[in-house]
Image 1 (cartoon, rainbow, N blue to C red):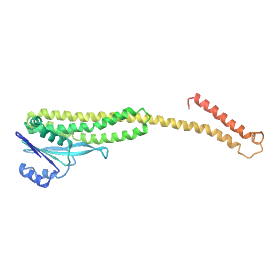
Image 2 (tube, rainbow, N blue to C red):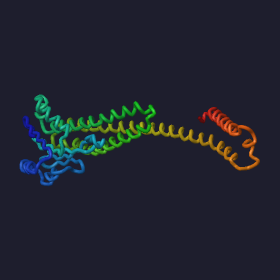
Image 3 (tube, rainbow, N blue to C red):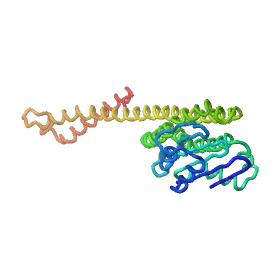
Image 4 (cartoon, rainbow, N blue to C red):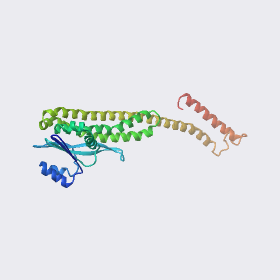
Amino acid sequence: MIIKKGKVQWINLVKPTEKELISLKKEYGFHPIIVDELRTTSARSRVEIYDDYMYIIYHMPIFDLQEKVSRKAEIDFLITKKSVISVTYEDLEPIELISKKIETDNNYKERILNGDTARLLYYLLEACLINGLRQLRHVDEKIEDIRNKIFNHQEKELLEKISYVKRDLLSYFLITKSQISIFNSLNKVGPDFFGEKSTVYLSDLEGDFLKNIQLCENYKETIEAFESTNTQLLTIKMTKVMQRFSVLAFLTFPIMVFLALFTIDSNSRPIIGHIQNDFWVMAGIVVLAIVVMVTIFRKKDWL
């Protein structure tokens, strides 16, 4: 896709072919190593400035619905004084939204293309940052759901939900935070490449990026607080269960000992064999002992 307005041109390549890469090399004179890197995704983000172009590798978080976790998607930018070339390795929502808006809204097209490449790069990266905020929306919904259920005696169910949210937040945070060098570098060296007029755009990008990081950190703190509270509630519930089992064990143990004594075959055994209805007498003693102990335990608030 090639979009041009005034002096600025935007070229977007999705899964570039060998023919397209060779064409870029011939037309713009990009270094062979740079062109070679465009054949596949890169492991780390970075900003590199050459004599007449800038190379940016940017990673953004994308939520994977099947795996229920954020994964890394890459956009490479090659920026000259008159062109911005974006290279993606899959269809990405923010890029698609901008291209569709340019096709349907002439005012928008005028705004982002009728300037310089710094302004166009600003809108492209800003769209990625906004998309990142939308990726966090499901996290916000899940945290709100946990907030509503945390005191509804659903500790075991919430334990799994909290684990999923923590895993997703950690993945999102690791992907996003690694981009801090991109925005720091753009803010520092960008004006030398684009000119002083680009300072306002690059500073705004860095500020919006920090908002993403701050929001992610706030969510991390919130879900960790909910995890701690949920763990305490689960511990209290388990402690009460163990307390009841201990009380039941204490109730049954002396009675079992008492009954075991009467199973000993001895002529000196009392009650059994010496009075009528000896079974019911023994049963009554056991029931009476249980009632007495239960009454005492309730008064002590052990039951």
